[in-house]
Image (tube, rainbow, N blue to C red; front, side, top):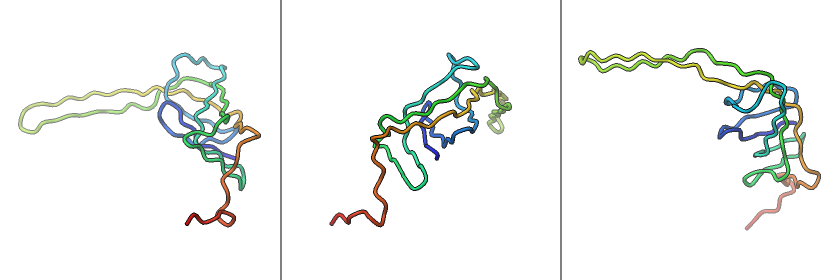
Length: 121
């Protein structure tokens, strides 16, 4: 079972028990539980739940493990023949979370399979 979830404007593919680096979540402390409800797609075996735009009632529960910084990214600008050079860099901050549960409501309707779908003509 996996899901596609929208977190801070980015889409992530999540599975239970996996670790994920999401954009820095300022208010979350290690050990806190976060719930994300913007679930765009859930696939459970042969059942597919597609949101339009989100799957109503579906949620992804996570536990915050730590806050980390990525490797340094160097940004170098130069204009030729003008003696202009600028070298800057930054380290992006991320929050490491563990996916604890994918929840799908009992009344959610999966998509019809290709074989049983009626043609719309």
